[in-house]
Image 1 (cartoon, helix red, strand yellow):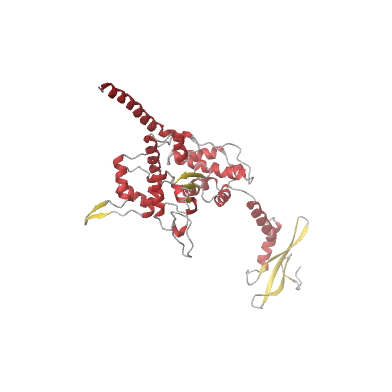
Image 2: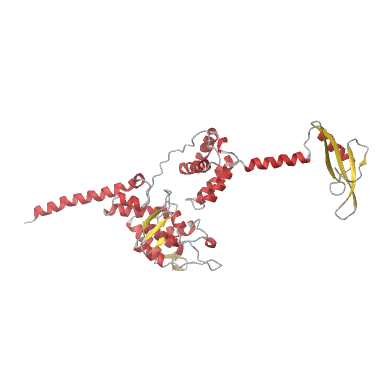
Length: 393
């Protein structure tokens, strides 16, 4: 209750008291009195100066309150309750933020971010997992299939399922009442380079290639980071994300091993460090930040952070080496690595599986035909040797 003297107005239930404005000048402060649910409510309507309040406006406020409009206090309490309820709701967007916070270095983070912002957030961002409807997911699936590849559709739905499973496993929210199924995609694509193409690529990477221009021939100088990343993919078979996440502490030059953090299979893996790859790393400088601290990444991005992309530099090298337009420089070189080992006849498929850090043998089996061809050649060689022996006097 205000302590100042109440001054009546010509409107019932409306009065004002004399207060002071911020400058210390006298100012009228209006109040309204009404009953809500049998209880007497006294509410401040506003100040004459700051709120442009007068007795007539206060009378209108009182009438609206009597008709059921919530008071300022009730509105503030409702907003507070809504915020509290919202804070307790684990929406898909909120789960995504928490997922990225707990797993900042997960594979394909740039692709995941793009898929979430472009496709998942507009359709499901404000919903909780238990509020998902199978029909809505089918609509998104059909809509995406009209303009995106089957692989992209699968990646989007797989990311949605990953986010939901993240929340359910941590008891942040109940899972949806149905299983999010993924479309089957025949995306087994084995890329390879001919001996001539590989020789051309190595010439470009060594800086021995020239480009014809209007001013004559000029040497093509490959981007140092792109060059080294491509060589590492060719010498080790490491994936794009694994190379971007590679830190100096993961390279054990003494024992000759590389530790791959967060690979596609999920569990950290260790692969041998070939001498050729060691030479690439030995020639790389240890970069420092502006504060003079050593940057942990072997192939850092901007401001020493984890690299997110290097498409432009890779495309320049691919073009200079005249590789096929559809050849994916890093993923393709991983296939070249595997194909060369498989066709050599010196590496069995189980060993190849371990080198490629495949979780199971199914992915490695795509290279089985290369080894089979090598075995056929070896078997035929025996027949040739016997025939040669039969011709010997």
